[in-house]
Image (cartoon, rainbow, N blue to C red; front, side):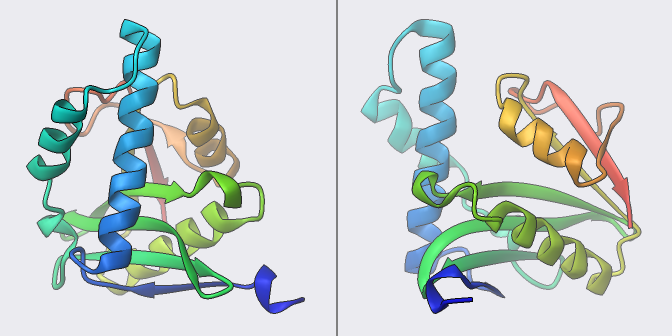
Amino acid sequence: MSAEGIWTVAPEPVDSPAATALWRDYYTEVSDRWYQLNEGHATDPVELERGLAATTGAELAPPRGVLLIARRAGAPAGSAGLHLLDSETAELKRLFVRKHLRGFGGATVLVDAAESAARALGARRIVLDTRRDLVEARALYARLGYAESSPHNDQMYAECWYRKEL
C-alpha cells in the first residue's frame, strides 16, 4: 500500500491545531446539514461561532477521555472522541472524517481505535447518539455492530442512540 493510503491514529489534545480544525469542520458540517434540512439555509456565522465556543471538549481529555486524530498521508483527516460516563461505559463523540477522504476506511479505523481506547480505560461498552438525518453515520454504526438502544442522555439534537458491548 502506498503511503497516501495509510491511516494512522493517535491521541491528541483537544486544543491542538489539528483537533481545533477538525472540530470546526465537523461542527460546521453537522450544523449546516441541520439548518439546511430544517430551515433551508446554512448556519448563521454568528450562531456557528457561538456553537463552536460552547463546547470545549474538556470531557475528551485524560484521564477519563481521549481525542483520537486520524491522519492520511500525514495530514489530519478525521477524529473520534471518547469519554467515560461511568466505570464501564464510554461514550463515542465527534466521529468525523473530512469529506474528500470518505470512502477510504477512515471511519472504521477511527471506531476501531476508539474501541481499543475504551477498553484501555476499563469500559465494557460504548454508547453514542446521533441524529436521524445522519444516515451515513447510522449505517456505519450498524455495520460495525452497534445496536440501537434506549436513550442514555437528553442531548438536544440526539434522536438515535446506539450501544455496543466490547
